[in-house]
Image 1 (cartoon, rainbow, N blue to C red):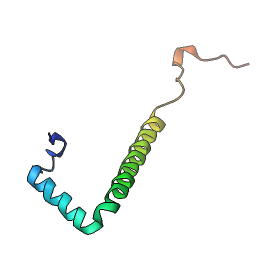
Image 2: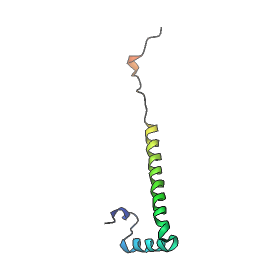
Image 3: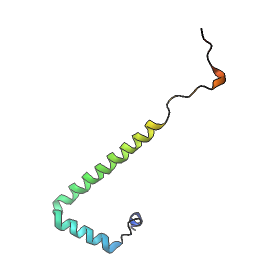
Image 4: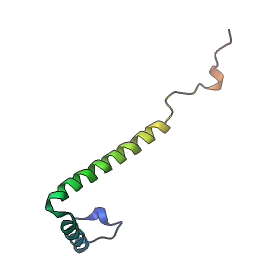
Length: 72
């Protein structure tokens, strides 16, 4: 169920404890706002990385050396 957290080695009991602590710290009204802002931040971060990848690709084709234009 929680394969996404395999890298952090978090199991179900650990996630429940973390969620309970968050609920105690921020309250029930703030948790949806926090999760929405976290999702927006992750979305912007992925969008930023996506733009970086596209900028590194060349946009024009290089001419081969045997197809040079003659000087006028």
